[in-house]
Length: 448
Ligand code: 5AD
Ligand code: SF4
Image 1 (cartoon, rainbow, N blue to C red):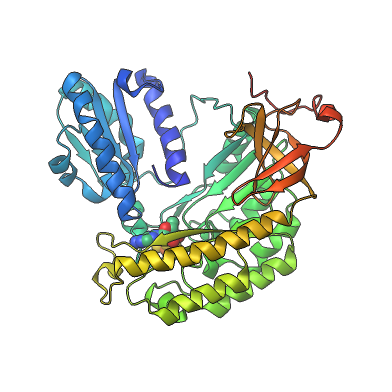
Image 2 (image 1 turned 135 degrees about the horizontal axis):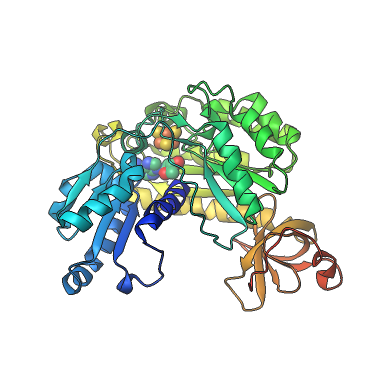
């Protein structure tokens, strides 16, 4: 559940459990072990955990030997309290205990009693388990380069459940990416809560722009993305990297959260609206084709109509390519939970839909501007909408569906855009049955 960090962490769990003879299955009803990797970023995410756990009660009654583990951010936050609401859970392991999962499972197998590990002692670096590799058949992969966050935005639970910033050694990151490329990965997304701060306090002698240059030199890798960037740490050097590193896709996710200086101060974001707008101008100056996406919270405590208007104004000024919109919700321990002037739910809902409507128009307009252009699409797999379709992404991260042909997963194919929708594009591969791509190395057939 939750963010890309959890996707990555779940893969590490699979590898940790392999030596104990656990293999992934798509049939939970047949599983010997079910692990939920949870998210607590918003109230809704936490509710999802308990509703999923509720559905496992019957399964545990029918098969008492089934081991149920709850890991990730909700586990870290709740610890023993989780057993009160979910007594059928066997293991509660927090974000710091990820690397100890195999020994916790072994303990439950042997001793058949409930265990909690929310000890904030972690490995010196974010966990990466090299072997065994599970080939996913995907063309793209996430690579965690750092973990935790030092920013303490007043609404955010991350620093409490994921701890302080820790960066991985660049050598390990590069080895991992080389291994992924050997396993047919064409695109990597470097992930962390605030990748712009990579290497700033670990003394690896490599900051984020330098890391991007090294990753850009990995042979066989076609595309690089990264997320998430904090505006206050977006240096001019990093902005210029969009010109220096060819493989770096022209897309940046740059959460603004609010367009009101008063709210940004209360959120402890460390920048002003004007600072943000200047960063956007710089990015567009260096890479005019760059796509910019953002996160916005509506209904932060104390948000008045004028603050919301300032956000609307910023959204119109920037013209984001896409926007992830959230209604503020209190999280345990965060300062904003104690702030006065909470915004009523009905106002949050109204602001949410106003903003969404404006953004949908922008997104559609931006998508329509791509009709009749040719885009380099990295093929990710079969399309989800219609049979005989493939799907992939443009450099600026737009989804393109197009008729299946000779194109293979992992290849980059030129596709002419014929129609635009709000959340995807429809295209036609350029070239006669695009057979010129069939001989190219490096792709894997999605049918294989
Ligand atoms: N309420 C609502 N949204 C939140 N986010 C983080 N914490 C909260 C909260 N308490 C949003 C921010 C962040 C994104 C991942 O989730 O916009 O960028
Ligand atoms: Fe949370 Fe702020 Fe850190 Fe992002 S930068 S993870 S919003 S504390």
